[in-house]
Image 1 (cartoon, one colour):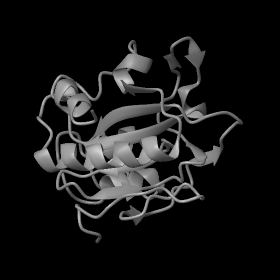
Image 2 (spheres, one colour):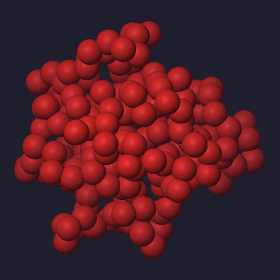
Image 3 (cartoon, rainbow, N blue to C red):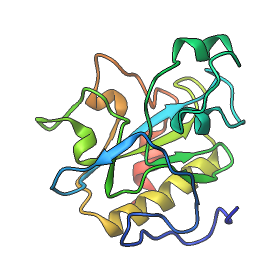
Length: 184
């Protein structure tokens, strides 16, 4: 595992240095155009529980539906994100930035539909109600800086901002003021 303070940069293939890479099959070619939006999500599996490898298993289509009652409800779901930031600040990349991850679903940002086409998805290990950790904010700050250095990012939104009738994440527990102030 790379140190959580290691410098981050994005290479020409869209892979982030200084983090673990576990390829997800849940991605495809990104249409032509700029990567200009970061979408912040949250996830925990089972819901409200942290740690373990369930998110990794979900994003790689290896989640055992019999391992937990909730997993049966999401069996067959094919989703991914570009990045997952664990509670301890460890960053895992599942999809190269130059490919389209399947994180936003039906969505709209500033009048543009299909946000997966022009965004990068960042999942924070958490819930709408539980505060995120200091090291998660630090890792998210470092990740955001590396992505902004590599791509013409024009905006940052929560999943709830681009799909307000369907999604609530990253939730009231996410401190937008703290996050955005750290990027100045």
